[in-house]
Amino acid sequence: MDRFGARFWGSVLAGSLLAFSGSAMAEQKGGGTAHRKFHQEARQRHQALYNEHRPHRREIKRDVGEIRGDRKELRADKREIHGDRKELHRDLKELKNDRQELRKDVRSGASKEEIAGDRQEIREDLKEIAGDRRELRQDRRELRQDRRELHRDRHELKQDLKEGSSGD
Image (cartoon, rainbow, N blue to C red):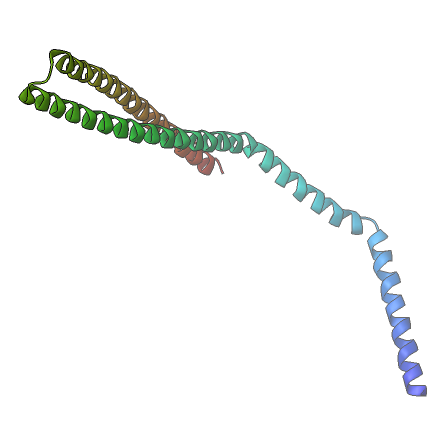
């Protein structure tokens, strides 16, 4: 027990001496304040670098947001074009059926009113097809414009990234 007690109290004494000497050294002139000053300067340098590149980061985020918006517009335009093509195909099929019906009525000797009704349906089908084609052309034009806009935004983003990497 004596050995244990001596070792125990010896380690307590050594630990307390180290603790007091460490705090006393930190309080000496320039000891603890130099260490603190170093970390403050490092934080300030880091904050200065961050603030220097902050506007650049905003531009990149803006460009990325514009690209995402352009992609959404492209998808919407493609859906519209797909719908327009389906509608055009449906109207062309209807025109084909109406023409076949007219030929059948003419061959079978149908009345003039029935033939006139078939011809009226064909005229209406042709108007619908013309409208469908106009709408399809307009949607394709919008798609081309949106693709150009996406290309322009991607180019701006690449330029911003080059400027940011060359500025470091």
